[in-house]
Image 1 (cartoon, rainbow, N blue to C red):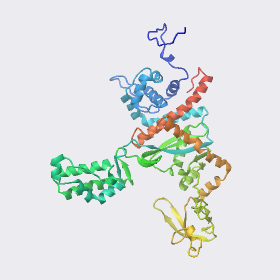
Image 2 (tube, rainbow, N blue to C red):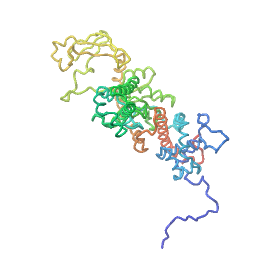
Image 3 (tube, rainbow, N blue to C red):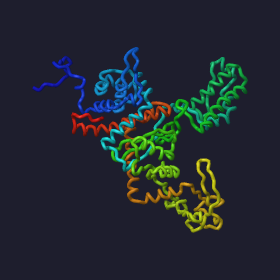
Length: 505
């Protein structure tokens, strides 16, 4: 009869097992240990504790190991990391059986969040030594991640305008007779209009001001003026920042479309290498659009790995004549899809789209698809752009039989040409080459799965910190952890070939 294997809690060893024997040599905790111990943390600017008073402080290396291994294991909170130091064998081994509390772990993050960019850079330097990174093709993309805010604690210019325009009826409905209301309930019932029923922060502002004024026995008209003054100040605060929306809990977050919802969020950017799928540059911006991020991200790549790829591809959201010109001026080779010509209602290509108008540089005029001339009329500056544009206008529109298909403008078809039209034309020509078409088609497979791994596998769908500076630090932590996971696989291959040699130096 076979015996069953069960736990023997009284088992003793003649020679006690050392901490070094607790985990396998290929365990990821060993990789994190080697990586952190290869860093000169003092020279990297990490805050070191040298005081002789009080309880000895945990070392910077120990706490960095805890953070990096925690991200490896999809643990992103300081309390979760504290529990891991009790429960997860790899973490217990890595921390040397020490158990730093969550406050200590959080303070390390708070005091050193601006140094994580250097740790991210160190992962790339190591990957270059291992010849993991290629510089043939890189891809740029961004992903919107929800901010750590309450959706109800926010100011919206549209709501403030509505209340200010309907202030009399709103306040009249909310105040019965001030004295009677205060005697009955010591508070004033607030029933906002249906349009604003979920705007709890606005409701609280108005209620607070009404109660404050009512308690002082102020006349109704004075109450209205005080409420108006407060709301006007809030509105002017938005306008001074050129914002339509502002979160009260995180002033740096911006309204963006995240999936099918519009919410306060940040735009997380990344540049990914085709060969290794490593993130070679990252950043977080407040812009919902990616239009101004092309050269910004390539400059980040240059800073991190000292060069950019032979070709860098981005999606259509990065298309901007100004950005293409900046990239050309810096010697960056880029591929950004040009927007497609829209179809007509019957599914045919629009014959009178601007792309079908030919520009004659010598005569400084456009030639329409019907062969008519659109000469230069005036140079203008649009409020939404920093550069001037040249406007060309058709003067044959009255007798043109295609007028309705070409333009609804009563004064005839107008075209504008920017200072960047030449670089845009070069980009169009470049994208007709088969080799470049193939590179553009690779963009999705290079970078989009990276965001999928961070969001779905690593479980990060919402920032856990507030403020642009803190969010940037968290994104660098996440990208560092993602890169370490990739490098760990290469480390396994090398450590199998050279088991007794230190891998990271």
